[in-house]
Image (cartoon, rainbow, N blue to C red; front, side, top):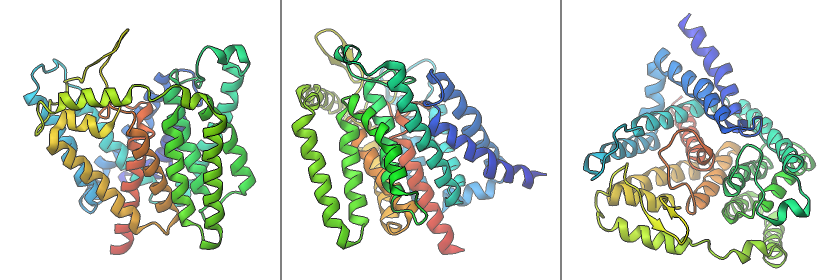
Length: 384
């Protein structure tokens, strides 16, 4: 009975849950549906799988260096409120860290069957394209509706978050072309086109930069005879954006250098151990105040100091090493381009990195969880 329940959870429930995670913002108007779907169909089944088969849980964790780096990073950050000058009364970070670790384990379980994972990704990519078209109808694309501000998706009220989330699926369709049984390229392009238009209309620069770095990785994976033409296409696309898409340039740098300089000055007050979770960086603007570093490495340095930053770099380095070893496999390339996209976008956003499931999980924890799954798969295949 236990074995059958574990098999049902890992082979049926978790793939459906991962699909709901990837498409939750596309099939609902409110983000509460996304959170509840992740709790009920991803985190809870992952917890049950870990309880039903603790040895499989330990094999996934004990054999994967990246998982240990992640656990050490989370443990250290959860200890950091001890030296916070203004600790919070109800500390949610231990709970949020448990969510992240369970999410990693869920992705590792689904990735044991790469074909099933690709099916989930393709279904989510199609839903992203359909929801982009629906957003065009729901919000409207007429000049009057776009003149006053930037475009955003139906269920994601912030333009920048909309661009970052939908950009994940642009990267996925790029990596799809290196899959052995990939869809026809015209079908992938047809699904990617409305997603690309939506990202452009949000006027968000970080998903475009992330997609650019991901495209370079995909280009390098092509045979040498095609690589030159792919690089030419990348350069032409970048030039076209610079010449014809003026709104991307007219908004300047969105105060990012000023924010980073201010947060860095505050972080250097406690450079070794950091301020601890529960503290907040403060950046005062003319009409509002920001409490976000808008940069994950800088936020890690603010909260965890040099020790926390070294642990975070250990997570990234172990992920990069595992993906470099698996770069010739389709799943390894997918994780690599996702990680390139995630590292680029989180350099400008996602300052609240230890959080409940929300938009930044798409470009922060999802690429890292996929990298962990690839690392676990490679170790499992090597040791039999």
